[in-house]
Image (cartoon, rainbow, N blue to C red; front, side, top):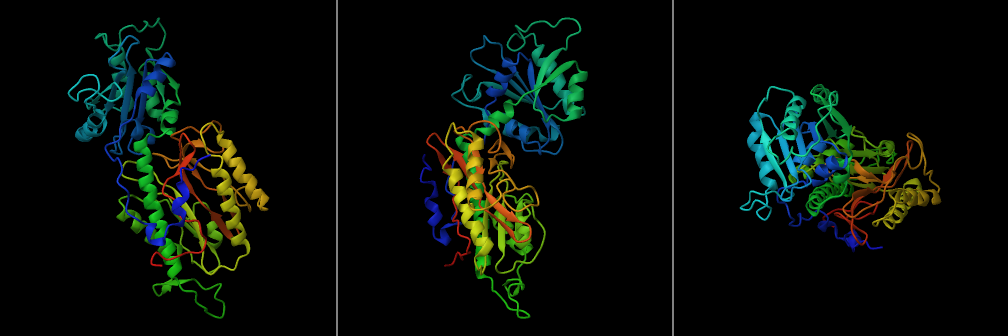
Length: 462
């Protein structure tokens, strides 16, 4: 098992934690559409269609087109088996006002001077791309149906030739779609005489990241840990005050004012904005009992001796997420928080020790759960109960949660980017969780943007 020296940064000095991003390969991203074309062939179908707006992660991944909030449609039709210089055609039906952006992000970014066609006119995966904006008043599903009919039924011989004629009463064409295809788009496709079939080809392709995708995730996670570093500094600089003779009930003070989870959240989000990423409403900060709430975005006091859980999951300009969690206690006195922290660190280590290609994803979760059980925490606690209440991790990419799940079926493969995030919670006391994102490599794993694990906050200025 190899971690690729991934945890060497855990002992970094505090002022190294928020260091500027390393230079990476941030050329425009492009998606290989061959797996989609191959899925169409394998299913003996005629075409693939995806419909969605800028918030549809499948369409964002397939096209790299980032706007607008009006639906667009992608149609992919494979070439016939005899073709040697191309694997198909892809048409993006986009709103007319966004044609230039669609041409730039979907077409030009996929061109490759060394691909068949020469002179930069070929495409990196052999799938010829184009943007269409005609019939812009029609529904995206209706426009997609027209493109399917035009491409598959083409008499040019390059795409449509060789397909068997349909018998009377049969659907015009069989069209593969992601399971999440909008209902209204499906209705338009079916009304046009197409038979729809679901495919998981897009989810499978998204699960295994390219080096450029890993660069994006690493960059966004660096921003996330920089935000955590800022919150840690604020906590380290906060003062414990004794009001009415009970400092344990008095909120910490920072900058002369009571410290709250919302003040901490604003400090974190300011760092994210300075790093060029969006918090996307995903800066979860809980203190005391609210630290046991997995999605707490409210405002409450931060008191000494209580766990402060920071789960930071921003989204970068290319649509990729970073995900990081750390837990701190100011002026702790041991007890539950310390025991939970030791258990979660051990569970994290046990989970990481299982990460390598070919390992069943469930094994990673099982080892983490077994370690927490060894420390006396319920590894199968239900929501609102004390113990381990969620899975050990999930895939991260253009969705914050995507395949593979470490609680689901399947094996880890090189290129999978997953979180390792064991945690334990007590609704009456608080919660402790540590979360890292790792990419599965041929030899084991690499932690993307490592960060120290200590529960006692330290200032960057130390």
